[in-house]
Image 1 (spheres, protein in one colour):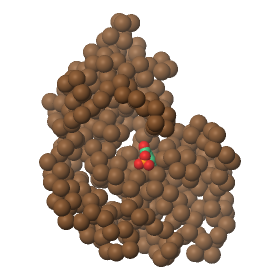
Image 2 (image 1 turned 45 degrees about the vertical axis):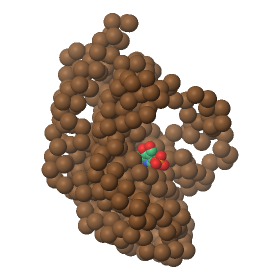
Image 3 (image 1 turned 180 degrees about the vertical axis):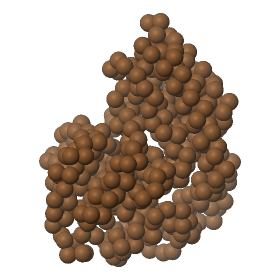
Length: 397
Ligand SMILES: Cc1ncc(COP(=O)(O)O)c(C=O)c1O
């Protein structure tokens, strides 16, 4: 297949998937692949889940799109449901994680502007973080390589070492608007932020009049076994949160959710989106939330992720301690860190060959993010495939 007329921003492997069902994908040749990355933490219920298919199909026969000029079916109701389940009081629907982050940043600055502090514009973020590919999102992200060749860095973004509390205290001043953090750092290497740190951030923000923004684009939507990752802990709710990926289960949907005191400074005309939260996205968003709001579904995620983690721990500690250093992540956003630089990419290519799809993350980590309805049997199959690939690597094959 020629890719000559596509931007060369991606370099996909030579496989062409033509069908998906649950955690399995079928390639043109008929070869089956076990999908343990799910469109990078997106396909909440796997591929072609009948409930999502029929939610989309039913809505598609009624009404697709109206734009933000009119009341969109299902939007106010989906906002009500997410607010009832979180700290949030207002929701803005968009199409992606980057857009959700973008509005989170705009809301933070606008809040201070409307409260008589227009000089409070600085956003503090952390090394290794990833917040998306728009201008604001790459400037807010903690990886310089995403900025190369794109002109001057935007002012107002400060980057600190992950976990450096002293640097954080020193960086805060009367120009600080917000702290932006992923409760479980995804791209940076599946690094969960400890409970005490999230609680400490909340306290610090309250003391200093700063807003706390969580990016739960990757770690939210049930991925860690709670609707949102920060909900594992008390007393650390943010002021603003960016969500996407799993909330749409594969349909492009993201949203920014915030407290009323923040969101209400975004008065008519300050923000908008043509497609954001259209009727199709809302139909699928409701269907996904039916699962994500169900305690039994969360119990399932916690049971399968415990099995996956235990299996990975055994591989890391008992079977391949010479190759592997650590199990990383939380819930079904989990993986393992290699000792040798670049071995994670090598593992990914070998796994692909063996019919097993995984991702990589920073810090030599292999990233697993299967559909949340993955079964214990499928987890065991995955662990067997991981074991086989590692055995080959260990043997120097
Ligand atoms: C934590 C986080 N924030 C934001 C984004 C950007 O989301 P999108 O690619 O939907 O714009 C991503 C994407 O991987 C992400 O992992």
